[in-house]
Image (cartoon, rainbow, N blue to C red):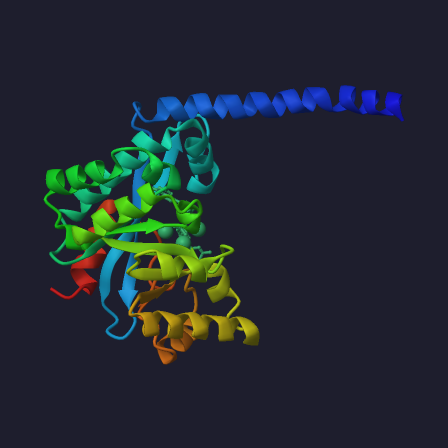
Length: 274
Ligand code: C2E
Ligand code: CA
Ligand code: CA
Ligand code: CA
């Protein structure tokens, strides 16, 4: 068995080396991508279900790498978090998103995703305040989307930062709601204004049990005075069911796909109240 193990090791070692090297190359490319201005933001509209009006948009990061093509955030955000690049990258996204929102019709919201690593790094609140001041976007129009991993260690510092931002009028949304292991616990302990039901629940709403879960989350949000947004809405049937159950907002391909800054301005001007 021992020699078998050694043979296996010899067999896998070159493959492991290749994985480590590919990962290292990704880190190097990613590091260079920010000064080379290879990142961009798309914007996906968010609709008020009752009125049918677009009330704002979420900024979604894109990496246009000359060597790799367009790389999705699910592939590079985790790497950026591990290397710490997410701190300057996230700050760039916040500034860019606020700058874009400054040219939208007044009153529309801009939602920006924030990584746990950013929130735990010192000076996050300061960088948010600076992005707002620089762009002229009022705090009341900014929404920060955080996932439960942000809250997982329940540090006093994170709670204080969230409270400070909220006192300024910035809204806090709990992203991917329902996928973590303690969604309800966080809702009790942390100040949030909105919950975004993860798109996996919306996708499976045809299933009776999943439909019951979605209805329960909407009821919970309503009871707590928290706005509920459904993510990943793709069909009229899904939207109808969400409307029937009093869900406040919807986001998804049915309402609009993530679009370039110029296209979202056109959409906002035509479909928002102003
Ligand atoms: P998320 O915050 O849950 O964003 C929604 C994701 O669902 C986006 O994927 C969006 O393109 C996709 N989506 C929207 N509508 C539909 C739909 O109807 N059907 C389906 N199947 N998908 C839909 P994307 O753009 O690939 O982003 C993936 C994740 O990357 C985001 O998930 C977010 O967690 C993260 N991310 C994106 N931008 C940033 C950023 O600036 N900072 C940080 N920290 N994370 C980001
Ligand atoms: Ca989000
Ligand atoms: Ca989400
Ligand atoms: Ca997600």
